[in-house]
Image: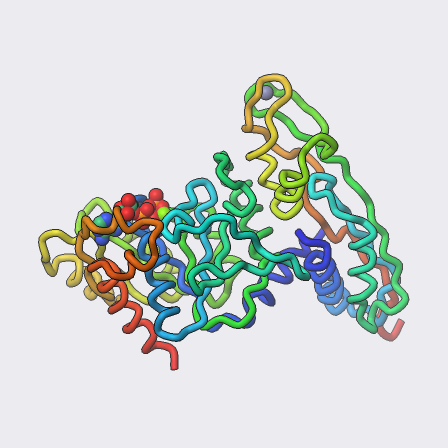
Length: 245
Length: 135
Ligand SMILES: Nc1ncnc2c1ncn2[C@@H]1O[C@H](COP(=O)(O)OP(=O)(O)OP(=O)(O)O)[C@@H](O)[C@H]1O
Ligand SMILES: [Mg+2]
Ligand SMILES: [Zn+2]
């Protein structure tokens, strides 16, 4: 028996030039914040951008974007609605405000389903907010999305970086491209993470300061884009966009 | 999965398998549909018919329904999924992403959302029949 969903995922992404999965080893390092802000920053630089929240058990990007009442359109599949200029897809369109207690196998199925029905159309970038770690979502996206590349997020803490190192090693072994590493929540600037990242031959995309303004800006995109946090993410967006002609 | 997107998957999977098996014509495509997904058979049949390729011009599409059986991981209770008393929105959520069953359904005995879908979750291309190239 063959699973017809697997056959169409490639086609759903055929119009997407670059897929960036924002990933990490440990949780709570700022993936959702960075994925959302990066998507907004790229969009404000004139690119066509999609944002996919793949953290099915703990989705967060809708809170950061402050979207409510959006629904995808049904047209030979699902067309993601537009939120603040982004083509936006999240499991919250279906789970609404309820908890989604999913085991690994169910997460996997839900990812395949969503990837098979979502019609992204023509995009320059699809930014994906990944759940932490190298579990189901990471393995599935690597398996299902040939053109995928990863952006790894760490904090200055060795606890975070050691897990990112494992993520990077896995990606290297699987020959999955890595656009670079971002160091988030920096309070005391130091070159330790930079030199370790460059030491393993991966681009260090920059440091983002710990910015206490971020919390107040959640759900308010204009305010968020005015923070020092967003300014730092914007520099990363500019650097990344030079990789696309 | 939306019926149209599903039909697209079925047609392209059948095409790939036909190529692998060097079929010059497909005569029958059997699709197994898990009831959890609440596929509208008429829409699916229509979508399949619309997306037919020359290779499957005269193919018969056979659709088989598989009842959805759920089993609680906590207390072992088994039950059958029935969409009848779910509201439209919940029904639709499960239709698009069947895992949303874990959001809206509970074990009828102990109330846990930690159940498995033993049977009847997805949509599968069960078999294709055809005529071999040069044969
Ligand atoms: N540079 C920063 N300055 C201040 N606060 C930040 C910064 N980056 C992230 N945060 C805050 O830290 C918390 C965790 O961020 P976020 O949810 O983006 O992490 P995550 O890696 O997506 O977590 P998870 O692994 O659970 O998905 C949030 O409250 C977020 O607002
Ligand atoms: Mg997150
Ligand atoms: Zn039970």
